[in-house]
Image (cartoon, rainbow, N blue to C red; front, side, top):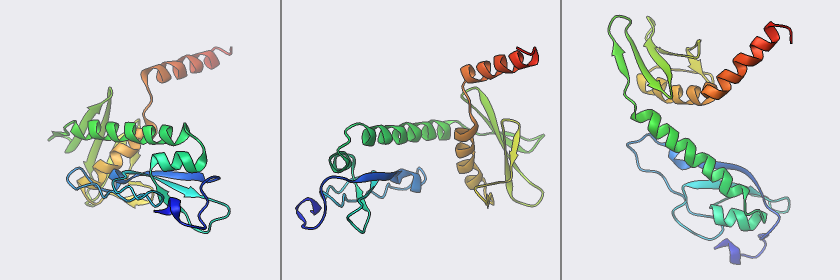
Length: 181
């Protein structure tokens, strides 16, 4: 356990990132839990990457240790909650079935009131259609399988989805500009 190890500061750490280890696997694989490098807890799913100006290495720790090391008892938990909610949204997204349209040769699903579509191109790769945009790659990667397109579809949805209230607000702002107000 590092809490008892000499030369490792206990306070003054900064959290530089938080990872959800479940993001590394699909729904069929087991989550590769890690061990906290500060207390030794062996089942950490949300890993907080901690950095200290007087220590040469980053430490991968759990939420409770991140709170103690940074002396911040709010933000580590908030960061973890954001990732938990994202994981829940991903699960809900994946639980919705893709419907095949034989006429258009497309797969579509309706999620949160919006349609997202996957289509195989004549070149063999896949494209994603959402929010009046087409994506033949995402983050520099093409989709060579339906599964890779499906994983990217969630990321694209997360990035571009807006709530009904946000869309209405944008509509009224555009109307205001249209009338010169």
